[in-house]
Image (spheres, rainbow, N blue to C red):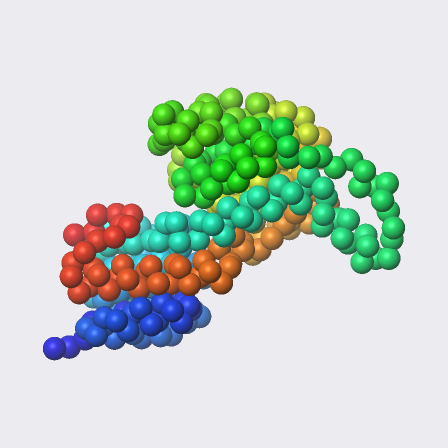
Length: 319
């Protein structure tokens, strides 16, 4: 019996490769870092495609994979996969929600601490040989502050739980989570406007969709408390970068922690280089534990689908 080929377009952890080896009916084709034209030429008779965040599974690439039955994303976000194009072809798209949730949540919490105490700027002053204690005397404590969450899925709910442990009050907006479920997590359910207006820290944990793109723009910033802190470790484009810069400049936003950008790497570095922004290069899922988790998960899911027809964590219907 001919083996079913699975094309690995982005590197996954060795534990994921070992998980794939548990499916003897599968054959892996590992060619990572290919340019789009090379990838389209190489897909051949592969029935599965595995990507992380580097490879863009565009309509053209999906069309070139004439035998594709499944595309797996070793991670939660699928904005680098043209899901409608895959659905048109009857190709199932799978992701691994929760596999890197702890890593992304911990980065968001770390951003809160870094902003509240200006840790990066204080560290830079020390490395410059400057004992500038006075400049850092205006830090704030997280205890007693209100954290507003925009989205309380896998990541947002963890951030909220950690915040409760720090003595913060947590209010949350998520149109897909009931008030009862929100309350069971220890958070107060609120409207988007209530979260925006009533929070000392606002942390974004929503997927990027047509509804959430540009959600935090000039209108939202105008409604916020003066001196609010913004954290976005979700997806670029949910926060309007130029409007966030304007809010930093006019004093509405005291500081921002940003891990994701409209374009990656950024074409415009104004936000990332702003002195009151803690910027990181999309490292929310970049822990060893998270990469192992998502690699094992996607291998298990693709193996289960191609060998048993079992569907786990589908983001579309396939056929």
